[in-house]
Image (cartoon, rainbow, N blue to C red; front, side, top):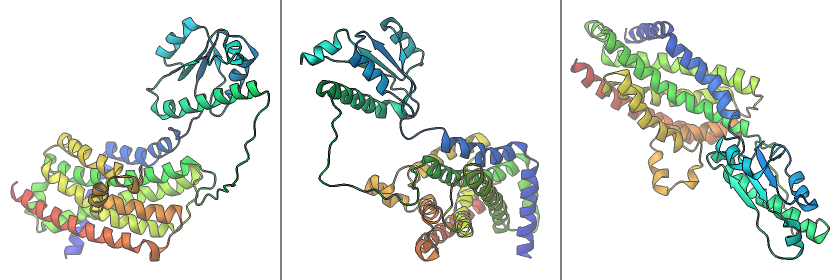
Length: 372
């Protein structure tokens, strides 16, 4: 009888979700447009950076420097006047503005050590700092080659041969797409379960449920399995049609094994959503709670920054979070083709954490509905 109640209550949650176009749009957007844009929009290396050059020298050396800035790192340089430089930087037209002073070539040949002014728009953080070192290296190489009248080729005493595993082309999209799917699984599982509880409280249907012969465990379990199923189905479609299909990202390991790990992760995160929903009295409060919880989970789980580079205290604390183990599991399976014999510790950790979260959330849920 309990299983039948859980099943029927879960169906009710699914029908409530179908009748909510905003949440349906959020699910579709999160696993399609958000995954694609997050994986492709922000480059992790210098790419197509706009640069302008004020050539006050008009010499062969200055022309060599101008010709050295080429794609794909830089757009073709715009030659401007000194009067235009500040206006273009203020307007955001250029990320870099290089000012080559008069008599630059003559001072270089005379050994006077002339200086070149480089203006950088540091609001474009992803390219500003990396691009500054690129510009300095390019200018130094061209000046040195011009002075020596030949391009020096350095022979190293030891040759380093790179062999890149799991992402031979060093394509950032491969990494970003999978991490974004992981983040969306965590976010939507918390949002949907918490929203389901708050929606029933706002509409008054929670009182109807309490008048029926169902227990708090059955009510909570129905929300966990139904919302977890929605997120699991959406993530599967995203991996197959968006990540593998549209973006052509290779998946090395078993998709079924990953979905098994995702189900364990959803057991924990949907319980977290119920727990947070018992404290929030409205969707506005629930949104603020999500900001406090979700951002640390995503930033410190190892998806964006390797755990090894974090302080040891943070590493130990984050072992209590399901996202840390899920990221390790997902990267092992989807990137490196790991099997169950390798990732079973993460499965065990997710099962333990999920059980604890479910128990704590159930206790809090019983207290919350007792106060209604």
